[in-house]
Every structure is written in C-alpha cells, then in structure tokens.
Image (cartoon, rainbow, N blue to C red; front, side):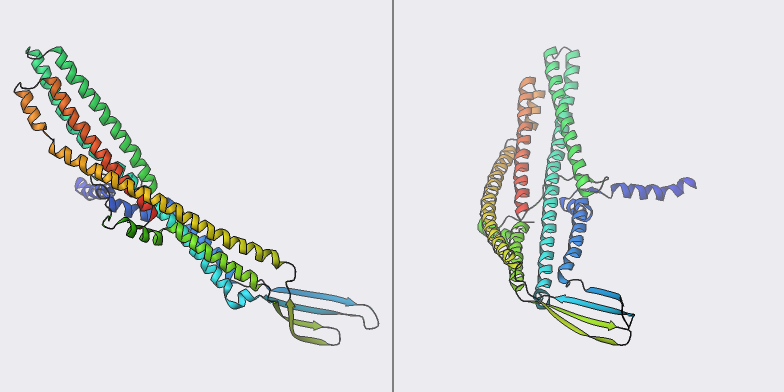
Length: 396
C-alpha cells in the first residue's frame, strides 16, 4: 500500500518538473513577462515614482504658530496667540500642479514600457540562440551517429582485411571532431539557458523549441516606421518631456501671480479675547526671473533633443531593416540550396557498394553538415536582426 500512496506524489513531482519545459517561444515569453525579476523591479520603481509624483498635486504645508507671552506692569498677566496660515499659489488653484503630476506619471509609465521592451527583446534573442543550439545538437547528434556507425563498420572491415589502418584513422578523427563540436554546442546551450533562467526568474525553466520566434513582416518599411515612431517608448518619452518642460514653463510664468496666504488668528489676553481670518499676499519680485529663463532653455533643449533622437532613430531602424531583409534573403537561399542538394542517402549507398572511397564520403557528408550549420547560422542572423527591430517598436 505504501508504494501505491507514493504514486500520486511521484506523478505530482513529475508534473512539477515538466511544468516549465517549454517548446514554444511564446510560452517562454509569457513566463518571462510574468516572473522576470528585472520587470518586477521596474514595476516597483513605477509605483514608487507615482507615489512621489503625488506630492506635485498637493499645496504647500500649512503653518501653525503658538505664542504664550507674559506682560509686565500694573496689569501683569499672560496672553496666548495662535496663528494658522495656508499658502495657495496660482499653479495649485488652476490645476497645473495636478497636470504636472500626471505628466510625471506618464514619463514613469514610459520608462517602465522601455524596460519591458528591452527585457522581452533579450528573451527573444536568447530563445533564438537556444533554438539554433537545439537544431545544431539534433544535426550533430545525427552526424555523430552516422560517423560512429561508419567507424564501427571500418573497424570490422579492418579486422577482416577489407579496410586499411588509414581508413580507420580517418573515420576516428572525423568522429572525434564532431563529438567535440557537439560538446561545445551543448555547453553553449547550457550557458544560454542559464541566462534565460536568470532573465525569467525561473531556475527550473527549460526550452526545447526547434522553431525560431515569429514576426509579422507583411508591411513595408515606411508603414512599419510610422507605427514604430508612434509606439517606441523612447521617442514617446521625448514627446512627454517636451510637454513636461512646457508645463513647467507655464507654472514658472504663473508664479508672477501673487501667492495668497489664508489664515486664522486667535488672541487671548488677561481681560480680552479676539479672533478672525487673515489674508496675505506674497509678491515674487526677485526670485522668479531666472527660473523662467531656465524653463525656456529647458523647453528648447527638449525640442532639439527630440529632433536629434528622431533623426538617429530613423537612421538606425533603416539600417536594421535593411540588415533583416538581407539576412532573410540569405537564409532563404541557403535553405533552398540545402534542401535541393541533400544527397546523404545516395552517398551511403555509393560507399557501401564501393563506388565511393571513405575519404570522399567523409568529405561529401561533411560538406552537407557544414552547409546545414551555415544555413542555421544565416537563419539565426535573420531572427536576431528581427529581435533588434523589435526593440524599436512597431512589431511584436
């Protein structure tokens, strides 16, 4: 009965172990989006900044004074005086401070979105590289199996005197080289998987996908660029920064309006008491001129930075787009050529029938797997270029 009781536990453990063994890039990206430590920190920073920005909506702190004084003279005694004052500037009354807080919240949101774009782009790149490694491991494992079978066959033929020591050495060297390449590829995959686990915040995550990330590539460059300019967080941050500096300029100019101080006064002496409302005006004669000039300069700088960044953005995405298109053509041509020239079954038949030497078989087979690696590398380059484009926005 004890063994029967352990079966559900064992099944639960197996399910838990396989829970994060993923075959789809989309599933991995969902895990990263939900669990990434970097995104959790960015989300916490966003909430912290929003709480800090709330202070912009509030008026200045009220002032409270209490005096307890003693008098000297024929009417010796003491008196009390209480004053409460609240300053109200035009920016607060008009709601501009609330708009400034909303603008700062917008900047914080865009910084968070930029972090999300960067983290997801890193995840896509890691997935693409792991897909390449998975495909290479499959190919090299297949090649290793072919060479191991060939080596064992050559050993048997050598014992029968049907093959030479040189043939045995050739097969052994090729097998050793492929095993070394396979080991290096597995090491590369393990390193990439460790980086993906760190990014995703899941130590038990495994990714066994054999399909590269997919992208919507139906639109032309100009249409894609227009969409990217609207969605790119960095460009939107520049627009938001211009709006913020313009609003700050309005607030500084409005500071010329005298500030009102509303208050309440209570006085209590030995023989009398008095109370009433107070009204004061603070006129900014000296402090605001430099502040307005600084705000004007900040608006001009923000606009110039926006123009510069927009120009740089278009140049960068044009180059990235051209590279992606070029790599796509190279990858497609390489894949078509590889499919058309795959004659591995014929090579083995020619070797077994004696129509081909062992050296020629090794060379021809090696050419195919070298071409396969070159094709996969070209496809990886294309998908990495697409991952780079995804950083600029306009594509998911």
